[in-house]
Amino acid sequence: MARGLIPDCGCGEGLYSKILSSKGEVLGTDIEKKYLVKSLYSMKVVCSITHLPFVNKVFDFTWVCAVIEHVKDDCIEEVIRISKKAVFVTPNKHSPADFFKGLVGKDTWAFLPGHVRLYGIGELKKYGKVYGDGPGISELVRLLPSRFWLLLPRLSDTLILYRDIEAER
Image 1: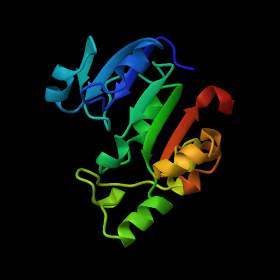
Image 2: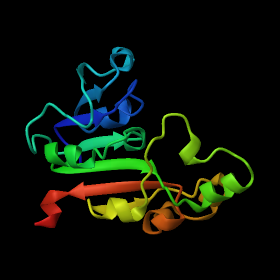
Image 3: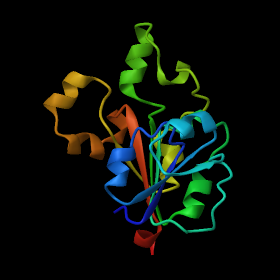
Image 4: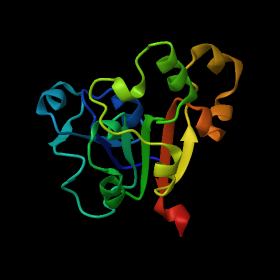
């Protein structure tokens, strides 16, 4: 899937640098220079995910994990503009586990520091395929195979949006 130069948009300190670097050369982008300085990426660009300084479809693959929920404006279109394939990972606005956490007084996605916008399956579907990524309850993850959560995003705590313009043709 991933090849060539891979932007890690909103990379922070580069949590996914090892995984992404095994697939190609990675370019870290973040709005905060202080995080980029600490990241392991050799190529770094300080920029906002809402205004990426790259030409259209220049990248084969772009990675965006735990970022779009921190951005007030919808930035998905901007990432799609620069890439032929993109993967976004974000909390599920309608997570059943999150709902139950709220009932017992625990923090939910909506109240985590920095979260300003949450997405549900409906909002993400217009951009590509939506998959689930686990229930948010570790005991259930062990009982059910990972494919179960991929195919039932409504029950997942986290959503994965996959956009592939080549598959759409």
